Image (cartoon, rainbow, N blue to C red):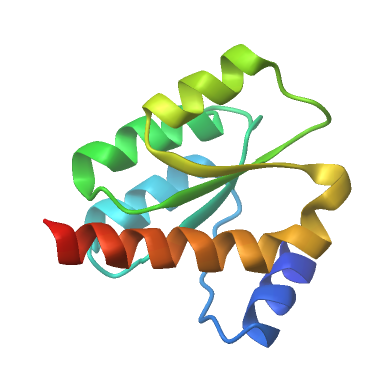
Length: 117
């Protein structure tokens, strides 16, 4: 699935790096926090959830995050994600058609926040 999503985002004009798990992604973000404009992560992952990753990222560099869910997520999960600065929460059933536009919105929102700050 990761390779399919990578190709989808690359076709939309994005440069994509990917990690096989959240802990290695977080380590990459710690090494180069300003290198990434957006992070796409799964909501449920072993070791570190997408929300845990978003929380850890916020302390490194407040960049936009897109969280992919497994099935339906609860309103509580969506609210927690929003409080952590997650810009989009997508159901996996629609990820292929909605991912690239969601990343674009997250990037645009991040650019607007940077100009307003």
